[in-house]
Length: 353
Image (cartoon, rainbow, N blue to C red):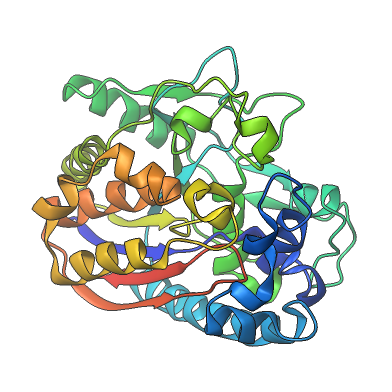
């Protein structure tokens, strides 16, 4: 008999770095000459943000933020270990990694076997040492299952859900860090090196109109003024439909399958209306309340334009997971929303059983 559970977590890259660098994105943003001076002045920030920023530009507050995140990640890992899955389906965004100018699919099943992946490439490029004190070239093994991933892609196509698939990562590009950091953070004490579970990654074009225009990353407002937007990413409703389809695929598998959504929600560097200073916490709280209430219809009615306006691009991973949750009748066991103004993004967590 098939059995299922689901998790939601963050893959916040700065959690792999040191406290010194955790607020580095905000410090970088404040150097943008095209942001009005009054927006960059801490005297005009919300009181909570001024307190987080403090007299040392967020360095002291970083330790408390890390403790809270790691505590929630350990709770997610404990739930995963209690369940002991045969496979772990992970939805994560592709941030100009496999998805580049030659092809940008809405979704892609990564049909990979075991793969040795450098753990800290992104952190090294940003000049941030890893918080474990490991060598810069430290790598870990991501355990995959190519035959099962191929079956998943084939099953989705035969179920009427056209699905792209990949047999190897793009040469010369980073492995999708949303997937890498899922293993890194679920095995935080060992920097991902002792994670035993097989991952079935499904990457999502969360960045949509900014996938190529901003190369899935940071942009100055002077660059934004000249950008040509890409086609939209998949809608929340379509992501929910994918989650449902994947749930149907595994319903008769006879296996124990965990579903994981890996991402934070609103990101400051994607929230243009707030000058990339802080995330849209009000928008995150609204969707978090809908998630806790189990209101899948209201969540499916959220538009892609609303997601982009709030800098919530990566929440599409969660819509995929919530589709599987609803399809399989899982219920929310625990959740939390860690909010912040200084550390780039609000980080939700959830366990469904």
